[in-house]
Every structure is written in C-alpha cells, then in structure tokens.
Image (cartoon, rainbow, N blue to C red; front, top):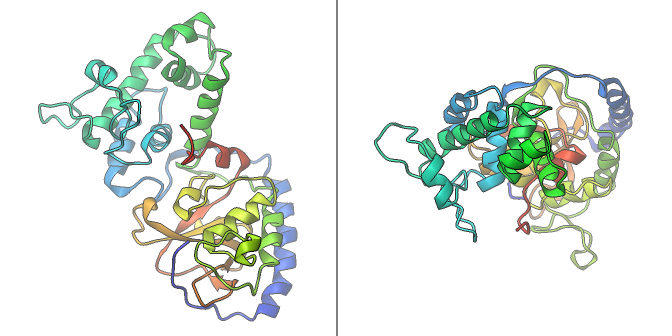
Length: 334
C-alpha cells in the first residue's frame, strides 16, 4: 500500500513485448515445476522478525515433531508476532496461552527465575515445549507425528488417541492444514519452488491496469474510478483468478513460499520494507513480470507502470498459492 517510488527507465513498449514471452514462460515453468520437490529446511531469509529469529530457530528443534518453520507458523497464526496480544477468551502473549494452560505448561526460557507469558523469551520456548509434550502424549497414534501433535493442540490429546490419528472434526482438520501450509511460507527452500498456474492470469489482469492513476486505499471499485494502491492491485489481480489475499501488503507476505531473488518467476509478489530484518515493516508490494521489473502502483500522482524491483528496500518475494492464501489469519476471524 504505501510508498514513494522512483520510475523505471525501460520503455513501456519494449516491456509489453517482453511480457508476452514472460507470461508464456510462466505457464511453461508451472508445468515443469509442478512435480518438482525439494525438502525445505530452516527459516527463509526475512520470514521471521529478527528480534525472534534466533529463539524460533533454537526452540523449533526441541523435538522431532516440530521445526523452526512450524513453530513460526503457529506464533504468526496466534498473534502475528505481537508479544502483547490478548484475545477476548483471555489468551495472552505471543503464543496465546490461556492462564490455566500457562500455569501448567509455561517455562522459564531465559532463566531469569520467572515465567512471563508476555515475554517472548519465555513464550516462544513455552510454545515449543507444549508442542513437544503433546507429541509425547500422542506418539502411539498412527500417522504423521507433526499432524497428530497439531490435532492434539486443537482437539486435545485424548481425541487423537481415541481416533488413532487426526480426528474427523472439520475444525481440527482445517487447523492442521492451516499450520502445515503456513509453515511453508517460513521455510527456506532448498530446491525449486513450484510455480502457480494462476500467476500468468494475475499478470494479465494487472497489465490491463497500466496507465491507471494511483489511489491511496484504492481497491478498484466503481466508486473509486477503478483505481488502486499497491496492495489493492495485487489483491484484485489474484482475486481475478480465485485467490483471496488480505488487503494490506505485509499481510500478503505469507501467502506462499519465498523464492530467492535469482529464482523469481512472473507472477511472484515482490515486497519492500523499512527494516529488511522485519517482515512486519513491509510497506509496498508489486507483481513481478521478469527481467528485474514489476507492475507497480507506486504513489499518489503517478500511474500504474513498470518499475525495477532492485531497490535498497527490497526484502523478498512470495510465490502465491491458493492454500497459502487461505491459511493466512484474517482480521475478521474470531
């Protein structure tokens, strides 16, 4: 949404010629990479705020049922990295422990002699410790240990044991899918990241908006004259292919895995931040088209246009997936 931009120098005509080839390439890449795998390990660069990265990396290896990326996904889903978060149900802190559960499972992670639910140095280790305790409770259940642990977190260990695995509750099954999907946006890929087949169509939508005047807060409605800001454009482009992204740029960051700069493909969302070590400081987003350029809704007084992505505030990119978008926390969620 929010950013002053410097115009790119490439002629619009030349970019339009390149765009057709790039979009075709997106479909080809999607077909070629659809089956590509590569187990992702560790944390993607910039995926976790720097203040918490070492804690997540350390405690995310506490037991085999969890990983740093999975722990990051849980914390992000619970609080969005807010150490002072408090829910209407009295869940508290970054890991959203209710008081009774904290009393039983909270740990003194930093060794200062107290267990403080509001202190990430205690809350993050406590979340990992609680996960590992649940994993021990359900270790005899059939199926994947991580999925069973997450199911126990949501429905209780007794239900996992009763059903010998993830119980047939829609809420629990959705929770397991949400966290395991969201974890992919925190993993550092060690192999190719599969391309989205919707990417080329999202570019096509954005391409048709070239030359449209920017509007702060614009989402393309008729009342707004079909005008957009940066995240309004990316949201509308992916809405056109049936993928619903959140409204704000930094909330779109976790809609899929994060390819490296040299592995970008057309359709990837590219992000820009005030602090390159903190994804919550993201202030701008564009749609990558290849060749180091994006379709960009830049700032008031400008029009939607092509701009270079290699600026000092470039933090990274996201390869949007349908499941990734669905896994994101929503402001209107209870």
